[in-house]
Every structure is written in C-alpha cells, then in structure tokens.
Figure 1 (cartoon, one colour):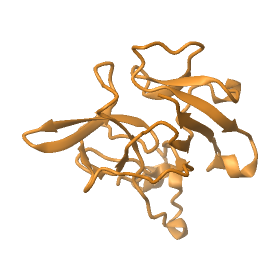
Figure 2: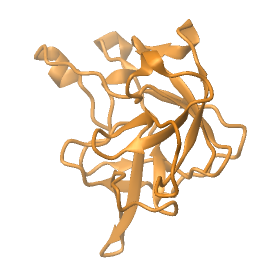
Figure 3: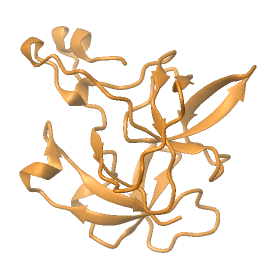
Figure 4: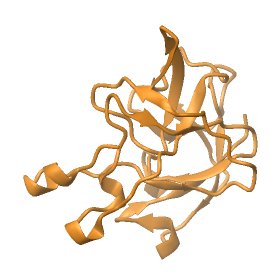
Length: 175
C-alpha cells in the first residue's frame, strides 16, 4: 500500500477514497491479490478490472471494455499510524502493489467515498462506474451496457458515514 505520509511531510497531501464492506454475504476476495498496473495507483473502494498478463493477475481502474466477470472492488486493508499523523484517507494501492480485490455478487454492499456529486445522492438512486473520472456516478436509467449496476442503500452526514471528512455512500450490487 502506498501512503501520503511523504506528501504530507512536503505539504502536498491529497485524500484518497475510503470505505467499509457492509455486506452480510460471505466476502470472497481474489486469492493473493492482483498486481496494480495504473501509473498513479488505484484507490480503495473503487471498481477495477482484472486481466492476466503472462499468467500474472493485474488490475487497473475498470474501463469501458470491462465485463461483469472481470470487475472487482478494491478492499485492501491498511494499518494507520496515527501517532505519525497518518489518516485512512492517505492510503491507496500503488503501482506494483498486490491489491486485495473482492468479488461483486448481487446483494454485496459496501460504503465508499468515491462518489461524484455526493451531496446530491439520494437513497434509491442507481449508480454505475464512470470510466472517465474513475468514480461512481448516479445514472437515472442504467442500460445493458453498464457493466455493474448499484443502488444507493444509505447516505447520511452522521458521524458513522464520514471518515476523515469524506462522506460515505452505501451501495448494493443489483447487477
């Protein structure tokens, strides 16, 4: 896992996506992870696609060529060193890391801060992955070309829905 601590010390800290797995389904992860190939890394609680190159599993942000069978959610655990000023939002999966990725069966739920226009998200909205901005976005009517479709189960500004100042939205996989 990469950390922003070096950037923090240089006063260039940025925030990365945070979240939680909230599903009551058994969590199935890809054994031993998959190598991140994005130059800038991959945020946790983002949609990624899995491909094999020379027998090695690799992930990058999900693109328009992704299929329902090769998309996963990044859920790499982190160890926060609060005594050194680290926050959970400092972490991301750097290029070359082995990211922990979870399968996304129907009914799987999770919270993520990686939502576009989070202030206008409402319970019941449909959400899809935007391959241009690498964020989850609200879509009024999902189409058959959307690889995965999620629905907003909950969003609040209560303390349990905010991590490091980032608002979480709970999504559930509908397709």
